[in-house]
Image (cartoon, rainbow, N blue to C red; front, side, top):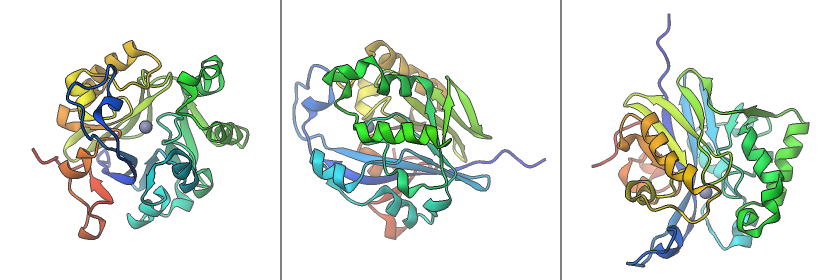
Length: 266
Ligand SMILES: [Zn+2]
């Protein structure tokens, strides 16, 4: 019998936002100073298949929201040798504007989404600006269209996507946020997405201020650590430190992508 596959895992940085630390913690930050935020999508490659995690925003949305756009995530994936037209599995961790969109660049994909996330993005919570502010209605409508096109695979809780790849409902930041656990040569890595934007959120117990359920967010930090082989196996969703702790796959990809399936620098 073939051995269980291990995966190469890549983080692709596609946009950037200069901001200050007080924006990144509930209650602000007593030592307020610059604390920029990076935007990522992720790629898993192993066992003869590729899984893309999140699809990112477009240049138009970057302009609308004042974000520094480095490249379309699909361009980054091409630099990694991925043919985005043939990718079959795209995990959407949640439906916030920076994690979903660009539907047209993945014409062959099914989108893996939690039931609770669609309920959240289309239900009563969106009557409140507090909760809908990080959603783009066209992204949500795009996902509804994808449902009617037979292209959404709904999950209710934890599920195995493929041998060595599983999805886990965490919630907290949004009602249906899911994280991805993947087997690598260094053990089980967890892509926490916005279960923790920065290392500091989970390591210092200081929540990020965009939150649906604070209780679920705090419990989610414990959850992602339980799913990972060590704290060094948990990858936060927006931390620029990811780009310095992990190595680029090649010299040409310095500053564009890093390998998460190799141990981070201490
Ligand atoms: Zn995000």
